[in-house]
Image 1 (cartoon, rainbow, N blue to C red):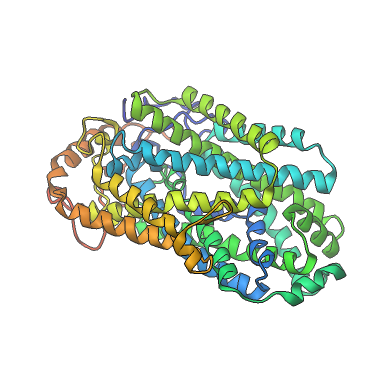
Image 2: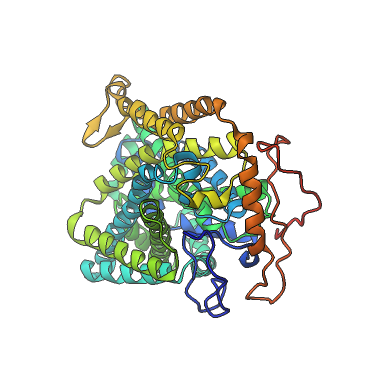
Length: 528
């Protein structure tokens, strides 16, 4: 498979105002890099600025946890989960690749299929739960037919995902600026006591307290919420200039992704305790209408639109995951048509599951979050250890598209570390249908993901001590020279050379994993 596509015409360039994105899983040429670093913050803020996030706040109170303890557990979990998620963002500008293509360096050209199942489950699982939230919520609030709603939101999110990267960024920015003022008004109303709940909700609030099990369930749910974004992140930063600084993009993504749930999860917990609600959209409508007449309905619609846009995000990354899997078995030429067909197929799958097969929202939410966390934690540990400590950002990008390349078809170190993490997490797992023996001994406290991070990350680091990373130097250098041809082509948007230096290497503390690559000075700082 070619690692770059032909240079698109102006009408098909992903940055065009009305164009469908032409790229899929291939490397993004340097001449086509665009976007501003600051846009990553609002993008990931809006990604969590929706009813699913609000519903995470319901978990603790449902288990008897007080509002204060729910907020504390959520804050701690969010910081931990977002820490791991945000560091994946740096890989996008440096490598210009979708996240799971880069994972071939750790798991092999074909071995990456083992982890693709986990990531695809995440993308489809989120959209199934999102469909259940929207179907039930709009039926409850407005009396709309749930099946018709499910089909409608699937079509909208599929179309948004088909138009692709730039349209997702645009939609998220517009919805951010429309939603934020309304949420500010609602928050002010809550803080000033303008929102009150029914009398029957008072006993629940009075009886709430603290248990370690409930605290850890809330902590784990919020940690998993942003860790499960890890396979997405570089999909939406891969068009940024390669000169984008690691610290800057990590910070932008971190504060964006952590900001909105730190805002909405406490509101969700407050709604559960004070209003006694179990439906996030109904809670938004009831609380908003108490502050300003009609605000609840407006916020409900904006919240649904934000969630539908996030479903487009899941569909887009899900398609890249499927195409990566297909290419790993049978090399293909990537492009627009294959991405459109894959997105459409995924839309049918989650629409049927969310509208026909699964209806229990609370069970679906709890199990989906935990399963996503269990499956992704070993992957994120291996991927980050490889990128920041083993290869330190130096990869032969062209070899990621070759089954006979330097990374091999099956990379045993990554695969062993991933499977070992899953196996050793099992005794710590807590699900509605299974509780591991260690978790039982701990009274139902779930610390499985902490064990997975330590085991998979630590084992991979140990196993790669015998890996001769310096021997990859000639392949990395040859890959950079090959990519340089695309880096200096004429941009379809501006007609001028991009001016980017293709030999740029990230700074990871002064150490160079590949000794053959010279340091490059005097690079532009890129968009800030």
